[in-house]
Image (cartoon, rainbow, N blue to C red; front, side):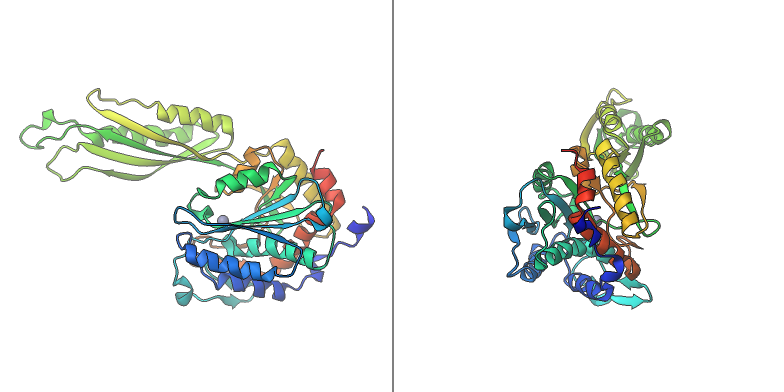
Length: 393
Ligand SMILES: [Zn+2]
């Protein structure tokens, strides 16, 4: 441990109530993904907190109906080297007006609010960690970059390019998405996500008068539903869900069209690629029916690569020094960390606060998990020992 590391603050050195007030200020500014005006209002609020500090701010204007994004960079004295990158989203799944029905409220250790757990608490802590380090004039081992995007909940279509650009130039990536399981747990593996649409085109006819002239698209689709869902049992490293089914017009008409939407989750890229080929190659059972299959991988798997394992081992060591609990887990849900991990970067995800109810009306965080995460973020950003272990340069 070097001299700088010996001065790393512990959880008790952080005022959880003060941090909570900052988190709540973000929650009280609603930011549904589809409201660029509200997203930009929160980004203005964030930028104002950095006025006068030696932090560069790059605002990426919104497009395609999405809000803007913000890149904060702290590189004191022209500090060189690949930066530590923190990535969080500020959009939520909650429509404007939700807050009026369900204002922020506290019950003991739990603070409820739309978007507080997924993931305003984590994104706030990321930006605030950078702000405090800059405000104190501390010199970290490498530059710190915080990227706040605004379209994660709808697939990160307008931010993926920036995510990959920033990740590609980073030394390691921290993703403060919600934490799961016991306090202290982080995420070191996420499944990849694929989506497909399968359409069947048959031929309509009168169900009473000339049934045999028809070719039922629903009957065809039904067989594919069973085949595709059956893959979940056959494939140990993937799952399938047919989430929607539509077709037909009325009971006395043989249905000419039917369509299903399929969700695929896969542990590793090899499995994901193989199954994409399998799904896209589906052929009709009935030669008189035409099938149209589209789709593919939306987010590549976040595998527990050697780089991720190395960063986790370093995080365990750092947590021990800081007297913080630490454990790892894997998730079926995806995050923007999937993009970074797929580039081969060291990534630790699930660094946000504990709580529950993501995308649900009981969404909340545990106040007792704020200060430990603040201490961990500060340590990861400021400890040279930690960073030397993570980055094999
Ligand atoms: Zn999230």
